[in-house]
Length: 331
Image: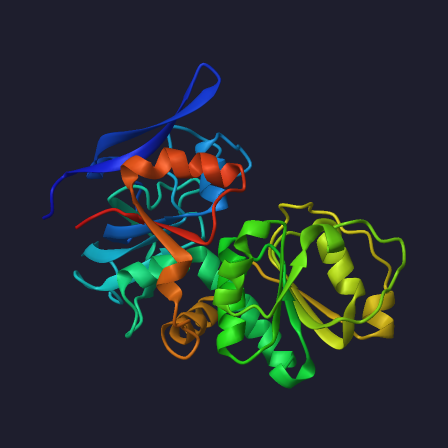
């Protein structure tokens, strides 16, 4: 048996404030589950930053260890489908929300949450992707079912974020012409390196537009922010175009008529990576390991240690994190 004690980044509520600290825990403190997994890498997501700041819509009870992503090796298994030393990915479901997550060196989870690490994918690459990459992959998968590269330009909102960066890189790899929406003028070179051929200022498309439908500009879109930007993207999507929606940091509300859907046949597809069916997860992870893997995947990520988490969490809450943040958990 591996060591009984391990390090974890634990959030505690003290006098109305939420404080994060690296603590030593025991395996017995982990929840029940089929698989005990030694975590080699995790990653930082916006939902982790919310959990770390005491957002009760994400995490109800504290003390708590965030981390909605984890990759590592099975140490103990009570399920016939997995054996010790199997390399597995665990993302979403309840991991890091109300179940202690990947910011601990060990996790214990149901076997139904685990995906085998695909061939041709390292553990670090799995966490460069993480939930953000999986969400981007799901969005690209659904969009490419109905829109082909020759159909026209695809626009990606929130393009410097994790999901946005991955989406730009994947779409470019697949031969699509990509326009990236951002409000960060310093990141234009980064987005062009990922494959964007056009940069759209967020202010140009983020203002409320009274017209129920506007000039067709995009064959499709991957929206990560919601609100007015999603409204305007839908209004300016070409006939038979497809828009996927996976975020609401701008707003969870949209004000629309039915005209884009009836007059242009626009399709709006919601992406829920948290509870996405397992057969789709396996399909998308396989594509991410193979033909969809960007050549510059490593450039999308920054690697940090557990000790550096607090600073990165603060930056993420301020909207100052570019791409992906990978957390190295074990040697």
